[in-house]
Image: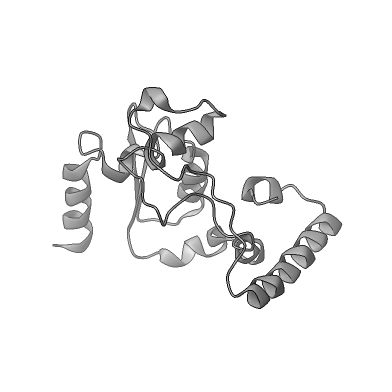
Length: 165
């Protein structure tokens, strides 16, 4: 199991077993001289969005970026190493979000982003000063490189207003 969303719902004994399994995998990784890694993106990019295989909604979104020439890189083949989530099990970034204050924070996310709920939770937990920009008709991956959707003017305004730039 490598999906952090699934790990959040584990019972304490299941969580202990998972941590034990991942800790043993770290030793295996050390002995093998490299981490265990199971790529989830293709070895070669697809030519068109129409060529992509159909999966669940989240996988489809990732593939629309990483499996096309738009976001493909031979060294970024999807997922993390088997033990990458071990660190995420030990601490939650949201535990420290209040420490950003009094520095301003800007949350930008698409209204159709798979990660929207995470951004909304972070916004809720953050102290002021804070702002959010919810970009219409926008997925998470659109904010990587889609200059028609990235709200550059609003980001510049936030920086100027917040930091007297």
